[in-house]
Image (cartoon, rainbow, N blue to C red; front, side):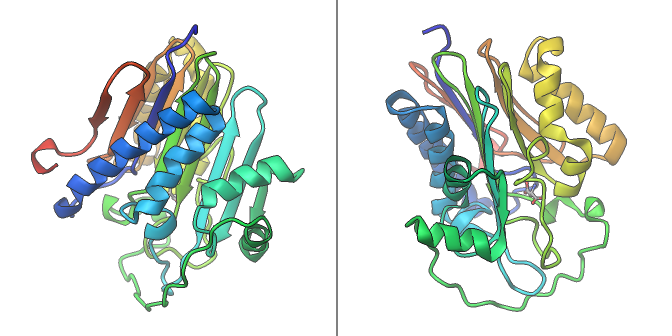
Length: 299
Ligand code: ASP
């Protein structure tokens, strides 16, 4: 095999103040990369990326799937996407609220429809039609968030966080990317973030794949994931490209805004952020699991 199969995941750029959850977050990240790697060795890169994200969606610890945060009206709307670096194919869903694993639905949208992005009730209906698991209905609690300003990028890192994503490199040096989120806390109902948008929340190409997290509005405007992937060849790897792009975003839009993970076909990987934390984990065949981005004293 010319490349060492690799899975890297993140648990969201932001600030982890609830220290009690850190130990659990660490365990879930570890399980996500382990299950992702297993799926990579037995199945393929797309299944690996989706499986890793599903583990985090199901955990209830992160802001995705079962753990999705609420909008200003107490509702839940989730976004997800997946992309194959070889075929250039992608699938995504936005504003879904019933499917348990939006990332799996995104994969099915890619496989079963001629479209890239399906939103709202229609996407949820497809999940039911295709026999995907649905979430138990959660009672809506009204929880107004007065601190939410019109300009989301002025938010403190507190409103962010815990979105999940995975980037994968298989033994043939092919990449895939997947992402899933409940969005930002206290968002306006109807708001869609970067996560279901190809090039913004995720991108996979021939040489590299990247998955973004942070203030969705900044990520959309900066086309963060595409920029990181596109810059990887010239920069000599996804790590150097991610560093360069995140420092440009910090200069252009401010700090405490974004994070990104990635892999490249030379075996490089990236976990770069300008927020306080961005929990991440990486597993390689034959190597252990590396975890970073969370305060070690509390884990
Ligand atoms: N990027 C996500 C969004 O804006 C949030 C996050 O990454 O925490 O929807």
